[in-house]
Image (cartoon, rainbow, N blue to C red; front, side, top):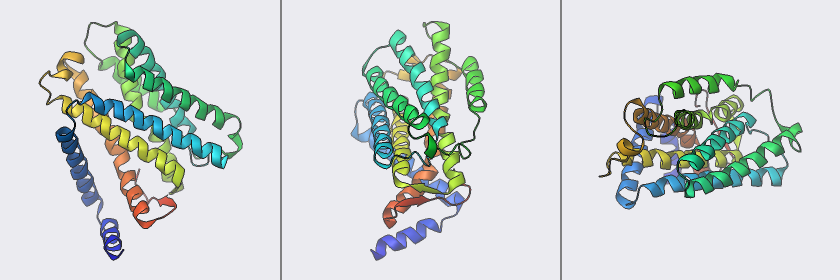
Length: 268
């Protein structure tokens, strides 16, 4: 116990720069470990989608058990539903596979969460805390999708929609993080859900990064050339590091056995 307490004090005493360096080193180590242990890197993307679905399941369990959606961002759920709808459409017209099925299950679970928050649990939803304008997120994503999208043989609209899906997914968690930042204290079920998103993002990020080292040059052949492959990688890295700081304090709270995650000023 003394060892864990000392480790906890040491981690909490780190400066912001030291925390960033530690998180970067951990993410790099995790990606290297995945590269060594998993031969088929496409499995990582399937795992990422499965973890996301499990995270939604944790969230649904919270809503059913506690009959409250306190601390949960409806706007993040709506953004999640939006990019899943777009991705399902693109998967159906471009490549129907196991990803399509996993996305369908996740979308159905997300729609149930949205329905519950808008009806039975509406009185427990804190609208004042969830105050990010969705248009401020969607419009930049749409403009970026028009400028940087796959250069493949698929229909132009489908290629732009696929890019839009990637960019919206990258920032879909921002309303949730902003809401947690304002509250400073995150209860366990919500924290578990956000942590599952972080794990899913790490797996997805590892999937795209490791494709660069595959002999088939997947990024070049499947995604095309130009700015798009760079933007895909950038979006994945952004998603991972958006959530990494929260995970730092999530792990500390778990080590302490705390029922909540306490966030200092300026974490997310």
